[in-house]
Image (cartoon, rainbow, N blue to C red):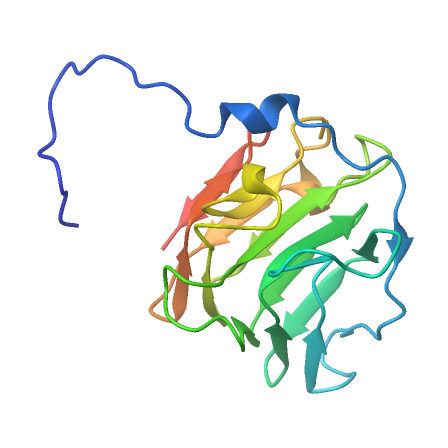
Length: 193
């Protein structure tokens, strides 16, 4: 890795750049998108999802999110559109397959933010990247909700479940290329690769 500022031993602690998210008022209810889900090795091979909050802001009436866990396997592709995505009491697992933003343009322009939240702190889902798929996502420096500027993945600070199927796992590989802030304030993260 190349550092833009040289490493310093015994440097003073820095402030948390994402601290504003610790006090963010999250939605208390959410309608679910009626879109189909990937399921294991079956289901539709390619899906395009619409954001909960589009990159240009606005949206259609009530806030919508993705409810129910989603798993991408080999041969499946999830195309995201630029904007903010809420995973409501649900998680995302990449166990093969591809997830990308199909209309984001170059890094530093449009991007995505995936937010894992929910009505019950014990049911808030998380992210699991098993290192075998392809991730080509980056955060936008300017999101419709400015609290998410530069954030690619965020798990609600209220989440209390942090083990088993709710463990946050980020296993890298040569095709796992997320770019942006990742903030899991109350989660134990299992990174490797």
